[in-house]
Length: 306
Image 1 (cartoon, rainbow, N blue to C red):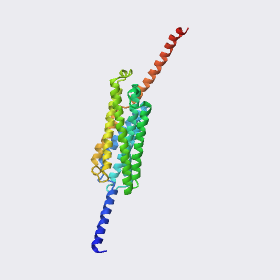
Image 2: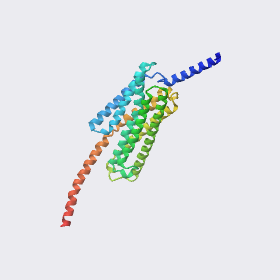
Image 3: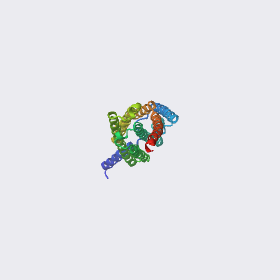
Image 4: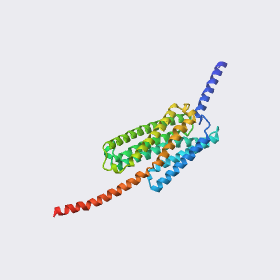
């Protein structure tokens, strides 16, 4: 082999090695410690308040939301750890922050799905819904679970650290994000159709239950915030490991951390426990009404049958 051929082969090896090292680079920047600490404190505070609100009111369907909040502050704590390690990052904190911050919004979505089901029950609005109430939560939570498993599985597969695992894991995560967007988009369509229909033809119970619309508006805002965040994540993964978004940490804090924190604060303010309390009151009222109607019907039927 002549000298020129050897030099060309050597240059090719160097380029391939450089490309490979670039693929294995965990961060394209030094993760900021200050930003991570701020969101650890914010998510910890909101999650703690959600825990207090839910246990005080025994509103258990918010538990997935609380777990999502726990994932968020642990994820940003791991980013803080990565920031302290710069530039010699270890795989553990990177995997924790990547995985937990990726799947946390799916847990927020699960609670939002269940919240719509309770609103429909509260106002006796099943006839206005595209999907039967018994299937509503099952369908959307099942889709959310599939999205969660795909995103979590993809993130877990990437943890091996090889180039092929990083690429394959990213494809699995992209599939999970597409599933999440598809189900969430359909959910928003179902919610809007229900809302418009019941405002056009109110149910008998509707005038006495004014607070439900406040929760519908909160549900819309939370849904849009999660949708925007999911689109951001999808674009991030579609751009690949050398994409523009992965080179600029600020976008993560604007389109993920901030939006998810706003979702948590929104449901702190308009907490789903109000719906749970209204449902208990509705159940008690319906039971009392049935007990009162039964003897009245019995008294009316008695003389007629004699």
